Amino acid sequence: MRERDKGRSVRGMSRRRMLGIGGALGLTAVTGLSTAAVLARRPPMTGAQLHSAVPLPPPFRVPLPIPAVLEPVDTSGGVDRYAITQREASVEVLPGIDTPMWTYEGTFPGPTIESRRGRPVEVAHRNELPVPSVVHLHGGRTPADSDGYPTDLVLPEGWRDATAHSAHGMDDPRAVVTELTRDYAFPMDQRATLLWYHDHRMDFTAPAIWRGLAGLHLVRDEAEDALGLPAGPRELPLMIADHAFTADGGLDYPSLDPTLRERPGVSEPYLAGVLGDVVLVNGAPWPVCEVDAARYRLRILNASNARHYELEAVDDEGRGLDLVQVGADQGLLAAPVTHRSLPIAPAERYDVVVDFSGVPVGGRVRLLNRLGSGRTGEVMAFRVARRAADDSRVPDTLATDLPSWRREDAVRVRDLTFRAGRMGEGHGWLIDGLPFDPARADVTTGLGDVEVWRLIADVHHPVHLHLVGFRVLSRRGGEPLPHDAGLKDTVALRPGEAVEIITRFEGYRGRFLFHCHNAEHEDMGMMANLEIV
Ligand code: C2O
Ligand code: CU
Ligand code: CU
Image 1 (spheres, helix red, strand yellow):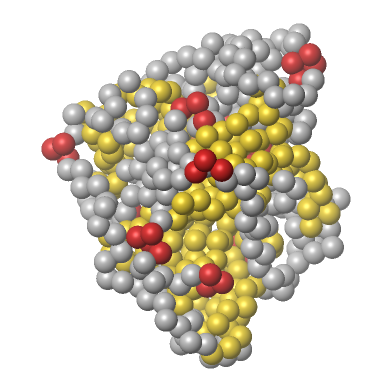
Image 2 (tube, rainbow, N blue to C red):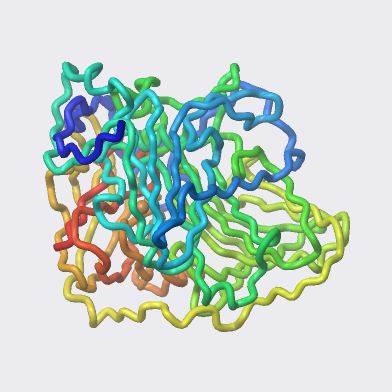
């Protein structure tokens, strides 16, 4: 039943160079503005919004769901083993409406995996979806063969026969394709933090995530446990994602090929990114969470395809509550950083403590999105239900293990541009002028090398590196912003901006990726190979 590591090259895949996105893309088409105007106006958003054809539910009625924590099927030999089936399922996202989705284990979000630092995790994924899939653990320090390279497909039953004669011809001789199942092995040899797993299939990642293929994965360790941060029911994972719905309750998405079998890409108005008009948290629209008048630890992930948020917590009097950031994408900060509002780009995570003790019982705190308008200006609410004892704390020193790479340590400095441009016959999103090609080594570096990368953007591009965490060195030649603190794996480039990051390429040799995490950009070329030798 389990056929692994066949090592065949990938056929039946859409050939990116034949991608028929069509039409003119360039900055003008993307934003309706010339380059100069874009840079002058710095639009808050890159992308176009869909409009749901169902009546939208009122805010703050649906209780915040917490994704179930997955039980391992086996824990012998010091390894936690899990089994996840990827399948279509009907999910109640909007109250009283069934939405067909693609899921991990039948739920959206998928089940949460809780792991301990240094204790390996293995996940056997079984693909019962109608198309190939790939699983990537975002932020995982994972060897290349389990990192979910986009051509390392898990084919559904019968796929090879059904597509053997298709016209597409991109071959990736290094791809390891399996049928029906694949075992992913994660050493979890990394800092405690919030990771997430999601689909990473070549050319079709954006619609797959949109359809529901995303779940959380926490890494914990003793040092973090000892800090005394809010825990148990006072630690809340918040996966924020915008979606849109068709009249029959299905998910709306402007795919050129809604079967996601052959032709990748989205229709013209959405080439810069697909935005929804419904804000979901843990799969519920504008939910409400009943809380004690106490400190809470919010583990926030932006799992949206393209939407950026600027989060603010506001009480009934309109007063902002402090958002005390204790961690970034790759774990705890050295010391807490207090924000009034916190920008979050696709795939970024923030670990934030909010203190509800000053809010009267019965009062409400709304989490707002300052970049949204109308309904997308709200995210969720907390209702303070009762006074309660609170022995949690936020220590002044959170972590002492953050890497202290200095500019002088870098053996190489690279400039990398993230811009719209031509891709074959159509247009796409390019890194250094080129669309993704599995066969090309874009960046080759030595294991252990420290490098500085200067990332240069036209419009918004949240840039993500696989395998390693990095630190933000500068923005626009100046100091990083307060929310750039700590160790990150995704950094939001704003229009016209250059951001410098520094990292050491450590962990494993092999073929990894870096890419824009605007999922539509990623599918339309904005991805490149990172070869560690
Ligand atoms: Cu979450 Cu390669 O990405
Ligand atoms: Cu990743
Ligand atoms: Cu981008």
